[in-house]
Length: 440
Image (cartoon, rainbow, N blue to C red; front, side):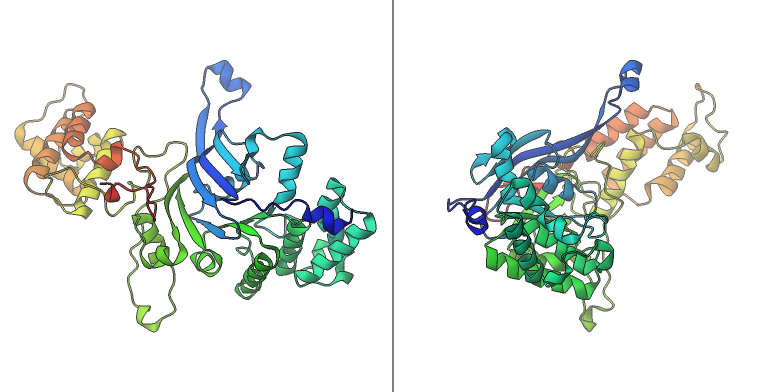
């Protein structure tokens, strides 16, 4: 059998999604060594990927977008079994890849490849690029050595290099050329599916466009299916058919690329799109409303909706009369109270009181009022009126007595949101979104 025939034999004309991912989880664990076990410390899970589901159809490009650290690259690596998942199912061409081993797993490796983010570290500096591209063909024993070398030369030319560069080393190439070599390596086995992990982020802008156009051309020529991982929304819009927006290990929204950019649903998607620089002169002086705070740690993600700590549209309890900004400030104040992160002694001193140093220290009504006003001015950072103000004052009164539990309970009863208590599931409509704002 010729090399071309062997490579073509891995094609399958079956219908349906090429890649199906359901409830995929990948947790890393800290404190899981012998010393921690001897000390009785339990392992701490870092929930890098925590229950994502999506399909990728044949011949399409699905973009996976989100801020750095949200789990995009880990998702791509786990789909290829470069990382072993903690839970969930992955099907490739209808076959469950987590059950594969031996020849079945080797066959899957032929059909699914990856282009890594950094073209400088993904190539072995001691190996000529021709041998790097040929390595997968050698491992799978496809064709003769002469046939394999000929295929490598053809691939180098196809990605915009020349066959006489076969024996050169990575140090002799620019960043864009190295990424072309990485693409040639990924194509060597004639795969069906490629994971493109930030393929242009380490490149100059002019080179980025060349690589993206090359990937478009190769997809059409070889009937490839892509999972494109990126934080650059301009790249996503240029090359993708559909987009999955990821936040802190979960999928927030899925839509076709035009719908996502023109009519986003999830507040996080809206914030991402708002942050994209715009070239129009009319947009020069626009104010960009940035997201509050940083992405929470995957070691201890927020309860309920994971985006709630930064969301500008938190759902308030029924009947609560307070504007959104003030409500967010009160929620932040609640978090400080529940975490015991307020220095009541320092605040008492700032209010001109003796300090609450003694456990049995009691304040009279005038002193309590002074303490309440000091906390509201220094910690709450917003004005509330009516019933919400009365509740806040009552909670601060408990803080004056160092009764943290009662203070937290009072605030929780009045201000607790469904966004805190229930984790929204990805809906099953034409534009799936995981947000309580869209639940019936």
